[in-house]
Image (cartoon, rainbow, N blue to C red):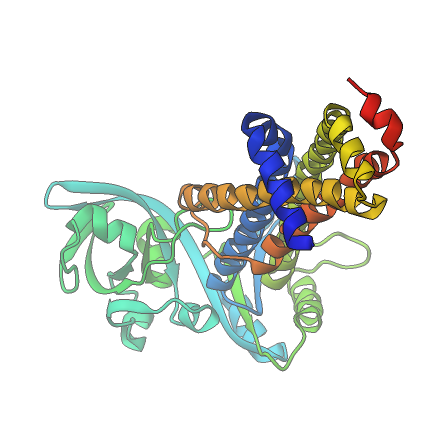
Length: 402
């Protein structure tokens, strides 16, 4: 019986192809929008987590000032000193390594090609704090670090623009007024969480950068690696106490430095993208309700058009349950067809959008099944009233209908 009812419903839908398509349009748009938005939202969240993970887990970034800038109109807070690095390594429990950084900007030149880039002066602890393997070459030697030799490790963006993809190991190029020997190249890392190109960098021993570019021993950033056995909040509290004491901040005075926990940044960004995904999906879901109303409206019109047909069926022995089932199945088939087309359009939209957004494509079976089930449920909910109305018709009045 159910198979026959399904065939009757499908025949009725195919009889009015354009009307059936327009009826399901709301469901198609709703399912496609919900699946696309949720999938892209999850892909964006995954991309953010990958970018934060590339910075390393359990890392505390310490900068002078109360934010990324100077803040306020007061005097510039003092930079960190080499002795601060030693003190943190020796006096704060749970610290695995401390990587001081001094930065400058300059133009790199090699055989007529030039490229403006960032010079990052640091120590080999930089590679202990965060995972960034070399694609070729070697790290600095302890002797090169201590002497502040002009040796460098370059990012893939610098290598591509200066050397056009050729092997750069062992070659010498000029950066600013300094001739530098390339001892290593970094693996590709991609865009940072805030939009910068992480591969557009030249890493040199910090003493070389301080001596030849900044002209001071100041340290603008400290990257502190935290042992997995320790809580980053606990280490952050100890680090704050130590720096307040060394920078002679007493009483209720505010810190003239700030500490960022990469894990907290990851949690915040993940929470934000998840919330935005839910909001957008909820807005897109409104079109599903609109589509359901459209189905109910067309089914009511169909009941009116087929009143005489319903009367004939009831007159020759059909029971109300069979008439109700016929129209209910018709509504569910309409909504399921719309859901299936919506899923197909969503996959096409996702396949097009993910390369443009530079996020990983993932197939989320859960949201696809959920959206299809919701479309079927909408058919049941919004198709029940027209179906009940058809089943409740009086056979004599239905036969008289013109």
